[in-house]
Image (tube, rainbow, N blue to C red):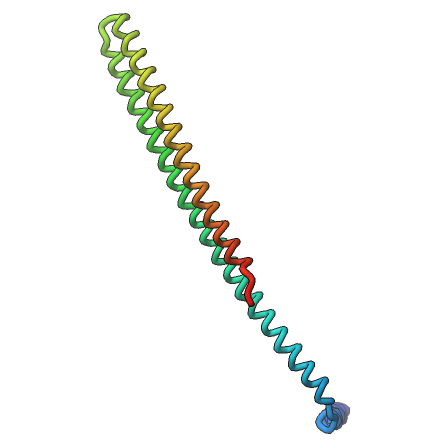
Length: 153
């Protein structure tokens, strides 16, 4: 019984409140301001959402570029290490087959000279590759920043 009374009371209260709001007249200037506020808020939201999406896309592009550069540099390191070990094993094999101490000394000297020249060339190449990779990532970041902060009129 209490439940039915509470339901009836709630319905009557809701009906009266609805009638009150229906009959109430909001001044036109207040209504216009409210509509302008909603429109401005929607516009701000749309611009903010677009900027967030652009930022996420730019970040993903920068990360992809950086990861690609890292992979290239890692492959270069592996290639250089492999080349250096192959040269060392080749020299060791020649030294092991040498017939005299002077021949061993000559082979070691040749290997050392070749290794220093090869290491110098590899270092130059790696520094150049690193510089270009860093520049590429920097350019992507700069382009994304310029695009993200471009004023819209």
